[in-house]
Image (tube, rainbow over all chains, first blue to last red; front, side, top):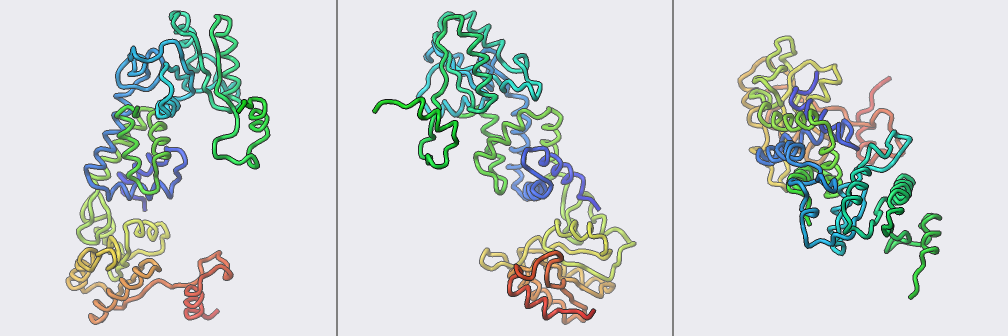
Amino acid sequence: MQYPLPIARLIDSFMKLPGIGEKTATRLAFYAMDMPKEDVQEFSQALTDVKEKLRQCSVCGNITEQDPCAICSNPARDQSTIMVVEEAKDVMAFENMGEYDGLYHVLHGVLSPMDGIGPEQINIKSLIVRLQKNDAVKEVILALNSTPEGESTAMYISRLIKPAGLKVTRLAAGLAVGSDIEYANLITLKRAVQGRTEL
Amino acid sequence: MQYPLPIARLIDSFMKLPGIGEKTATRLAFYAMDMPKEDVQEFSQALTDVKEKLRQCSVCGNITEQDPCAICSNPARDQSTIMVVEEAKDVMAFENMGEYDGLYHVLHGVLSPMDGIGPEQINIKSLIVRLQKNDAVKEVILALNSTPEGESTAMYISRLIKPAGLKVTRLAAGLAVGSDIEYANLITLKRAVQGRTEL
């Protein structure tokens, strides 16, 4: 005997999410069934909305309800700096930090030839076009993850845009604040020593 | 700055599920946003359906699309035995086992005075009414979890229905198949010795 069809379908849907197997999906589906009706309706509506109401900003690629996004259309932001990030989530991380008031460019991925992701599959071309069109930009910060793919994507973009006379920077690498030297990996330690600053 | 409203709402909805905190909810919401449109629509529909199309069987309390449920309305099942379980999930577990072909009664909980759950809060009254109306039932199997609440609920029901001359049984307690004696807790070991069977 199988679960009644509606619950079997909900279990299947939960199983499509990352890190959720059959047992967890079953637990979540039964939990959802016992949730207040309004909560379930909100959940259902939120899923539809996230697909229908959100789009990518045509300027920077960030996720937004209106186009261009709130950051691109805000004249008070520093128009001379563009921070290049991998994902829309990274924009939120820097916005929550609260110290950066320039613009962004979201790549939606990194170069990864092993997975068939070349420069055409991510948002690089629109960055080049944006820089060509816009003389106000003086600095591009490559805020990509400290992974092999992130580093090589940063190198690739840097080589493309540096000839135009732009200042191209990347985030400082070193020890995470609060972390132990003992547990740091070798490359992190090496970077921390190379990038040491005077007190 | 906050996430765009649709995604913030979806994160909130995911956070209402058990064991899902803010970081996981954010990860799941962004993942859902990148899922194929049909998958998201199915997910959204499954949530609505599970709330709207499923109800409790008026006879046994099991979760079902039609009332009475497929088990209660199947005349080929052994009408002389009712297995009392805590949750609809337990019915599925026994059905998947495939060796039981009697009827069920789903309590939807166990007695737990500390949490304010008395006999009126769970499906006990309907069991009594069902037994009074139905002479065909000869045995009631109390298949409740081996927890303090499960045990005391079983004792409570047993005391209520035994005077009617019914055979009241509970599941065998002992070592789980494949488990080590070394790691079994004392009560399990005690039960395993008490319930030893001849070879």
